[in-house]
Image (cartoon, rainbow, N blue to C red):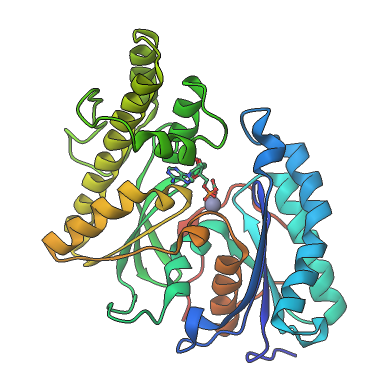
Length: 353
Ligand code: KG4
Ligand code: ZN
């Protein structure tokens, strides 16, 4: 029996964050009806390896997932038998990590005799700004819009015609934007994950000391490439005095280059589609310089910008509970098999009626 008024549990375990949330879908309620959410980040577990170790990630999800489910239910004051459905990230992501979330979600749904919903991780990211609504003083977010989804694994420009109807307008040809931040930070000796660490030291760097190229902005198109930038930084770093100030200056130059490149591509995507709304989400969407530059461009050029709060830019359970609830409301849920999709094309998703 499907009770569309009952809260939906969302589970995220595609990479190195275990996220759980509970949401009772209500477009007029704060956070679209978000009741509670809990997150455990494995960052310190992987830090000594300089990147995510898949097997360690899976094992840690096993340890943390059920305690987080219990905590989320307790925080919301909701009993497990009151759940209406269980949504989980089915992909894309690390196969072992995905399987932990999928197995837990399926088992719970099966035991409670409620539907399970497979959520595409990137759809979760692109719908995440809806968790901020209704926000006073801004135009509500509704399709059509362009979404810039920039994380450790993806750099996508997506045209969102309707919820569920997605066109990939641009992709990276090599490193994702977050990966470029992480690798560049690593080569200058900064800790993992490099994005926030690099952004922090860039604050004390000069914007004029190092100028790196804005890759692929000198030709038409919306695809991106960031691996060359990393090499430019490597050469600049090796040829420098490697002082703390130089490191900050290089970090600033790198951040300026990436942010400006992304901003150019976003404005191009808006011009190409004729859409007037821009969503920025995914871990790199937490970058303050990117947020400020795009918000400013929007004010100047007449498009509206939508960002999730910082904690919902990076991986989290709330965006999965939300995307799952929207799919459930459209009557979309799946059979009993435990299935994950480590590679999953966003454009192949069914439309939400
Ligand atoms: O969305 P996310 O949590 O996980 C993936 O799905 O990949 O994104 C993580 C990525 C990492 O590469 C991290 O370095 C980057 O987002 N990141 C940032 C910032 N915060 C996180 N990059 C730049 N500036 C930030 N403030
Ligand atoms: Zn993500």
